[in-house]
Amino acid sequence: MLDLCNNKTILITKIMNKEQIKNLLDSQRKYFLSGATLDVDFRLAQLQKLKTNFVKYEPQILEAVKKDMGRNEMETYLIELGWVMDELNNTIKNLKDWVKDQHVETPANFAGNESIIKPQPLGTVFILSAWNFPNWQIFGPLLGAIAAGNTAVVKPSSDAPACGVVINEIVEATFSPNYVKCILGDVELINRVLDERFDLIFFTGSPRVGKIIQAAASKYLTPTILELGGKSPAIVDETADVEYAARSIVRAKLFNTGQICVSVDHVYVHSSIKEKFIEFSKKYMVEFYGEDASKSEDYGFIINERNFDRLVGLMDGNGTMVFGGQSDAEKRYIAPTILDNVTEDTPIMQEEIFGPIMPVLTFDNIEELVALQKTKEKPLSLYFFSKDKKRQDLVLTNTGAGGVTINDCMIHAASKYLPFGGVGNSGMGHYVGEASFKTFTHFKPIMIAHNTDLTENSLNFPPYAGKVEKLKSMIENAD
Image (cartoon, rainbow, N blue to C red; front, side, top):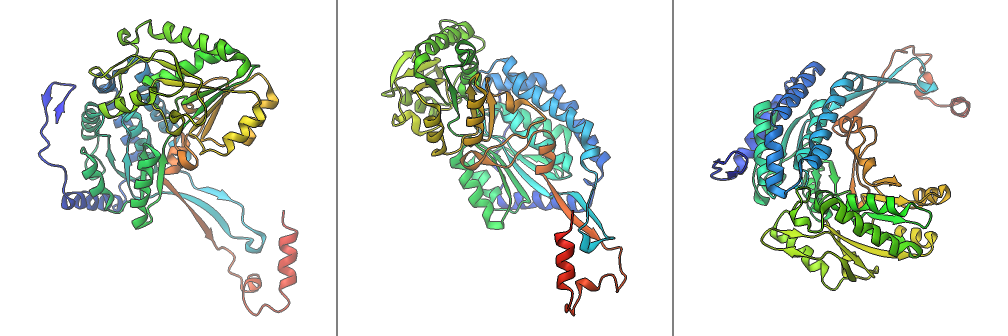
């Protein structure tokens, strides 16, 4: 494999075979069972080492992302470097509180006993990232796995090869392979690894591949966390600040050239403000990236030829192109594009776009639009622009989505205090902040019996004659 960051060649003669994979997992399980990862000070030391090396490799990360997808440094700081560092700092600060046993109440019929919830690591986990934010999608879940006390195998996407090389270097410089190991390879490698047993699989990617991952995990009843995507809509009603809505939506739509799971997929605009919204959207596409976005240092390119061809195909015969539409196959460039006169039956509305093409649809009645959304698969995100509090409550109460931002886009996904994840077709499970620790933890319920007096415990033992009314009274009068 060519290391695009340092212009040196790293030869991977062949991907790991089944025996090598089995040996790796055996060594990780042995290390886990040794109890080495249980001590909270050990976990904190590993997180600190990761933080140190993540900062050290920052220039290589920036260069790799630029080579793989042309993303500008600011966006990489915002959604990868900044997120990982914020998560590391937050986890290091709070981990000693998170790992504490939780003492909870005991039912009256077991009075005198002690009830405890004990956080324990799951074991050995497998983390697979998508290509669009490979550093965050590896190290975000990984720091949660480390914090919880697990061992881990991580697999960056082969569609972002430069990033994969840097991720591998960071992992090798930070951890021993029997604790955390990065593996590089293609689908063949993933299939071999999925034949083995894990204690949890964490996957970020598309719903299509998520189904394959979950099917493979079912062989061993392995729990899965699936961070997927879907067609995340933005809705702009007639009470909204139209210019602000357009500015926010354009930024979200074109962040990482539209290649982000919480991007705005399409926009519903009240018919009375549609023309104004489109004009403001054009204005900010030019203001952000210039008349020719291919010359902008802030605008990237499509990750590979396959996705470029798919996106070009989506621009043909889908509504009316009112802005953009230019493309360059050699550079994998697609201009910021607006499509008007799009309907629910238009082909572009049948799949997640994942690119810089923005279809605009109209509505006249918010209740009818909410009813329509309820018939669709639940998206990863939903955005609603409105100054009407009752309408905000209507949308929040009656639509399903992994997360929601009101009067802006994507910011709900950028808070360490809010869990991030999908629902239904857009995924299952959560991470970010304490949710990452919880995702990789089993909260074991424990009751310690202190009351061993035979007379006091007689209610729980045969013979039961005359005891039912006493038990019912205890339950009915319980606080």
